[in-house]
Image 1 (tube, rainbow, N blue to C red):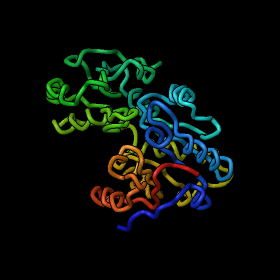
Image 2 (cartoon, rainbow, N blue to C red):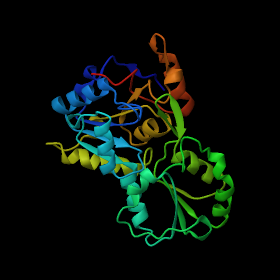
Image 3 (cartoon, rainbow, N blue to C red):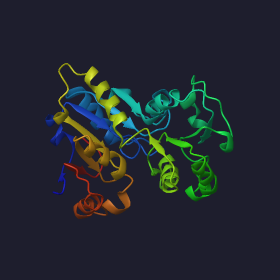
Length: 287
């Protein structure tokens, strides 16, 4: 498996593509501030090449994510559409009305359930679990949930994971996401349904949205996925047989970027260890 080609900026490769499917957290912002270079690169691509669909494992429907992007200073001219793991999770939840459901996650994620008539219950009385993340992602560890999960697995409860990310970087700190809890649940023998990357449903939705914004048929060979997460962004793009641009200075930045910039040998090794490949790599998304 060949190492990715290094690109100084998106402008070097943009003419090969008509559509950009771009990860958000770690590429466009870090949860506290947006990355100016990434926003400028997406805006240039959108103006000169074609649609930019932001594809994120945020466990909320896309409406609140637009507000978050605005608050972080991501200009609306930098993207065409936002597709979230929450959008896909809502479909799974709707199929399970009336529940009852045991909800795991912080209150900020509750828009996921808006207008879905699900009854809520404690874990020992629920029909299934829906997880958007830990109750408190600043302090909770996956192991805190082991005892409750063991009982739920024994009771045959399905676990809907609205965000398959294991960890994300918030500022300078790595925090656990719903994917870490789903990983534990699955290790205990439980059945897990994943809503976002690297699973197919979110790509189907993102490509459909991109196709609506093209003035010609969508050619999958001219779609570029941009991301920083190996188990989500890169694995998802590989599974869809789509070209991928790996952004090194994201969740793997501590390893993949040194004082002199991107470390090509480390990037190649990280990909090889996971059995993944990327056509391109750069330190940060810039034009």
